[in-house]
Length: 292
Image (cartoon, rainbow, N blue to C red; front, side, top):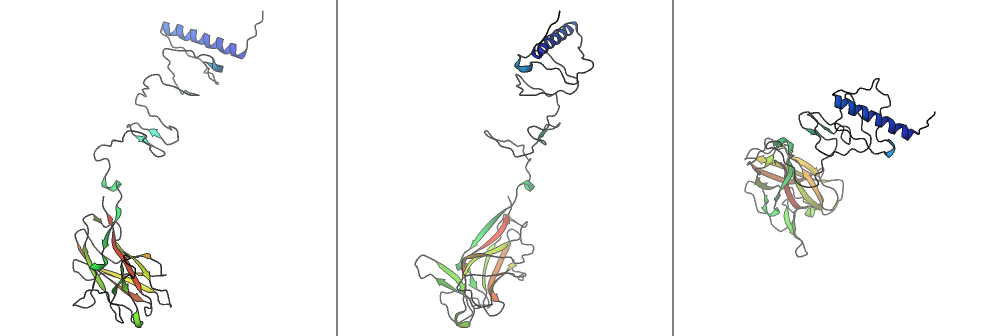
């Protein structure tokens, strides 16, 4: 007598037979070994057939799970690691840590970190500024010094120039009226803030315009500083260009500058030849790196 079975029927019969053998072995206290091991594996629940359920399964060797797996209770890894989670390089390690191959997104709740887990080196310094009012400057070329006034003339002194339009403010202007460029120094001072850090070079930033851009002689802003009354350090320079308002960064040498120091500073204008265009300071700031 010949029997013809479909592949589906053959799979069901093999699965049922194996289930019976496993059940008998379990009752008798034996392990069921399939020898030699099948090269293609043994499939359960093939072709959408209802799965075969086992109370306990032990796999000696490597096993593969194909398709979705849903855990119905606690999954205990027995101190073993889980690796390549979603992406190569995302792993739980043997010490309980987690390495991520990409960023961490927290959709709700918060992240708690143990005390001391973030050191000072993990927080980057930020840039901060101290605004220096234009009216705090004085003329300081001579020993006597002098206040800066609002009268512009054929001289070497910079002046305050008020806008002809009410409310538009004023500038500290180094002009070249009558062919006489303003070359005198203007000075100011400040105390270095307590959050000052030497991780970045402190600079002065001057926002300025020019009355014109004529001739081949570009005007150059010079800046230098004195720490706690010591001699001026090497001056920094920055060349102006164009008539539009622009921010010019001038970096003087301020060796060993530290929080709490008295910093005196000066600005003056030079040129490769004879300065022939007015340079109008609109604002000045001291920019430094601050600790966090």
